[in-house]
Length: 630
Ligand SMILES: Cc1ncc(C[n+]2csc(CCOP(=O)(O)OP(=O)(O)O)c2C)c(N)n1
Image (cartoon, rainbow, N blue to C red; front, top):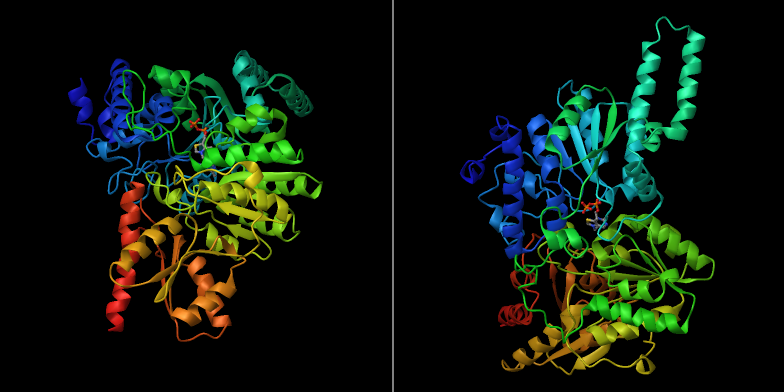
C-alpha cells in the first residue's frame, strides 16, 4: 500500500480511495512525519494531530482551486505530503529545503503563507470577498487551532466575516493545547462545548421542529425565533460563534475521516460563514508526543524508539532564556511588584520556573502580544513592575502598543526580547532581525543587547532600576559559557555607556550583542596581519554612546559596526547618524548585518557564515577595505 501512497503527486490521487484506504493513508502519513521529523526536528505534535483533517479536506475540496489556508502553518506536514512534496519532504526546515510552514512560493496549494498566528480567518475572508467581487466560484477554508483562536485578529476577522456573510468555512482544530495548555475564557468555553455534545442534537431538533410547523403565523414565527434566541443562550453550543454570525457545526471527532468527510460535505451546502469545531489530540499516534504535547510541539531530532534527543546538548552552558528566568526570579524575590507576562509561551521564553515559583505573579494572556504589551502598560501605570517576555519576531505584532501605550506614557515596562537575531530552521517568519530598527524609532525607550549571559543579568537588574521603558534583546540558544556573577555583584549599568574590550589603533569594531565575541576574535586574527582593531561592546543601541563613537571615528577614521539585525535602520544606521550629527566626514564606516531582504531558513551557523556574521566575516570586510585603501 505504501507504494501507492508514496506515488501521491496531488490531492486528486486520493479521491478514489475508499474509507479503509483513507485510514491506511493516515497511518502512512504519520509514519512518514515521525520518521522525517526524527531526523530534521520540527513541529511534530501539531502535525500529527491534523492528519485526518488534512486527508478529509483534500478528499472533499479541490485544492488548489479551493483555497485551504492553515493558521500558523506549523501543522501542515500532511498537507505538504498530499500536495506533491513527498520527495522533498526529507529536506523540510533545512537550508535550501522545504519550509516548515506554508509558503506561497513553495506550492500552488499554499494560497497563503504563515508562521505567525491568528491570520487565517482574515486571509480567508479576503479570499472569499475577492472571489465574490471577481464572480469566481471556489470554497475558502481556514484551519485554525484553539491556541491561535485566542489571538485578537481571529476575533476581528470573525466579527467582520459575520457581518459580510460571505461563504467561508472555518475549521477549529481544538486539541486544548496552545504550545502549553491553552488558557483563558475561550478555552473554558470550548471545553464546555466538548463536554456537552448532546446539545448539538438539541439545537438541530429544535430548529427542525420549528421549520416543520405548517403555515405558522408571522407573530408565531417571531415568537419562535425569540424563544430560540433565548434558548440558545441556555443550551445551544457554539453560541459565541453563532452570535458572531457563524453557523456552528460540532463538536466532532477530528480523527474520524468518514465523519469529517460528511461534515465538510454538509458545510459546503450551508450559506454564509460556518465554523466546524473538531476535537483532536495533539501528538496523536506517537506515544511520547501524546503524553507530553508541549515538549513535542517543536521537537529536536530524536530517537523514535526512546524519544530521546539525538543531538548532544551542552548542559554546562546555560540557555539565554534560562538565565533570563533565573535572573527574574532573583529580582522578583527582592521586589514583589515584579510580575511576568507571556503571550502563550511560558516554556519557550524560559519562564516556567518563574511560573512554578510565583504562580500568582505570572500571566499567560494567550497568543495575544498586543494585549500583552498594553496589559503590561496598565500594570506599570498602576504601580507594578511588569516584564513582558516576548520573542523578538512576535513583538512586531505590538509595535503600536509599545509606541502608544508604553513609551508615549513613559511606563516602566521591561521587554525581554528572546530570539533576537537569526533563529535558524523556522526561517523568515521567525528571525528576530528587525527589533533594533523598529524599536530604535520610538523615543524614550532604552534598548540593550548583552554580549554574554552574565551581562544579561546586569542588564535586567539595570532595567528595573531605570524606571522607564526598556528592551533587552538576546539571542536564541545557549550563552557563551562565561563565569556567572552572583546577584550581589550585578551592576546597574550607566545608561548609554559602552565598554572598550580590546585596544586598537587602525580601526574600531563597534559591536552589539552576540557580535561582540566574534569581534574580539576578529581583532585577534587581524593582529596577525598587523592590523590593530579596537573592539567596543556598545551595550546600548539606544541611547547610543555617541561620545565613544565620535572619539574613535576621529582617532581611527575607520569604524566597522557589527550587529545581527537588518542593516536598514539598525545599530549601524545609528552610528552613521551620530557621525553625521557630529559632522564627521572623513571616517570610513563599514556596516556588518543582514541585507534588506527576507532571510531564508536553515541552520544558524550556515546562515551566519553566509551573511558574514562571524569573526572571519568581519576580518574579510576589514581586509577588503585595507586593499581598497592601498
Ligand atoms: C503571533 C505568534 N505568537 C506566538 C507564536 C508561537 N506559536 C506557534 S504555534 C503556537 C500554539 C498554537 O496553538 P494552536 O493554534 O492550538 O495549534 P496546535 O499547535 O495546538 O495545533 C504558538 C504560541 C506564533 N506562531 N505567532
